[in-house]
Length: 110
Image 1 (cartoon, one colour):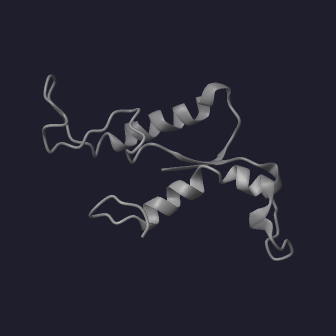
Image 2 (cartoon, rainbow, N blue to C red; image 1 turned 90 degrees about the vertical axis):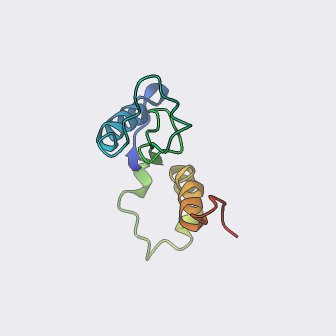
């Protein structure tokens, strides 16, 4: 999940709420693990709400007013500006790893 235009919120309340709603949506796809069963010892896929590697965990792009209306054609070097780097700080490394990782080994780019 990508959470874009993430506002500044106390103690990450926005992202917590986003993660909870995403988990509710993904829960329909997750396997039911019987109470008392070892979730790691079975083939069931049912990550917890706090699992940062799970599909429901949001990858944030922060809201930055400078990005609104930014004309990329007339703004050479826009990607190197500090406010752009700050907005995409968490998103870029995570997305790059997800795109370039070998799905058979879970290793990063080669």
